[in-house]
Length: 312
Image (cartoon, rainbow, N blue to C red; front, side):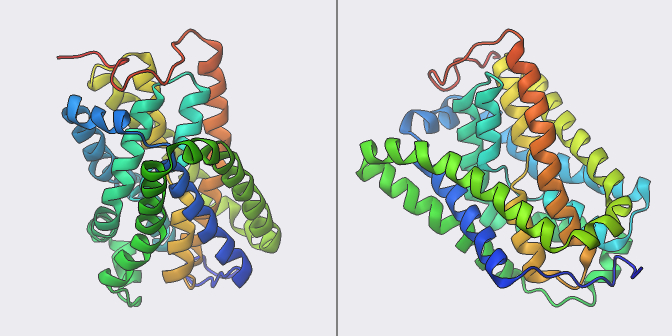
């Protein structure tokens, strides 16, 4: 079996294009569901947003870095873990928050803000945290990556569909409300089809290397959810707000991670495997946790942004 650091892993061009379409649809859906009253939460509770962003781009990747060092994972696996950790939250976190009877307004506001800033922060955070892992640094010396190229790719995948969605929501609010009901489940369905198709195309590789990446992915996912939960409690949020923060920090935009992994690290198989399998595990743990919370007590409502937030 080839060392995971030397494994070259590529998906068919059609599947790669499909993943990019899914990423764009997710961001378009987030923008369609972003209302003015949601964004007012940023003004009403700027400290909550600030803490959430710091946790997302500093605390969570820092925990991921420590995990890569403790587990002594291969360089490409470390790069994959840090890449996913530096990606913003995705539309899936909003769906899971709603299912868990959490504060959807807070979730959408955080997702919108983190994705807006991801154009700059994701490439910068990824480069910084990878530079602190010796195994990852060693591998990256042989990979030519221009920060401007990464930023342009992230901007194309996030900035353009997000801006288009905001424009549609502003100029055609009724259409946006109707379209959003179709875009969210449609994008989720496409994501499932793409993941299943990609897994089927590389089934033999997944079976061979599952043991290499399974423990890091499971441990990292659990820690990420834990960071989100702890952040929500530290911000003195009510139960709905804690649930929202848990999914915002624990459920990443792995579709974006897969696109970046295939685009820049296809010759480092561990990066692609971590991003792809994390996406599957995100769905499993997210559905289990949201279902468990849904069965308990909790207020359901989109409500006014910040209504579920308590604190000074």
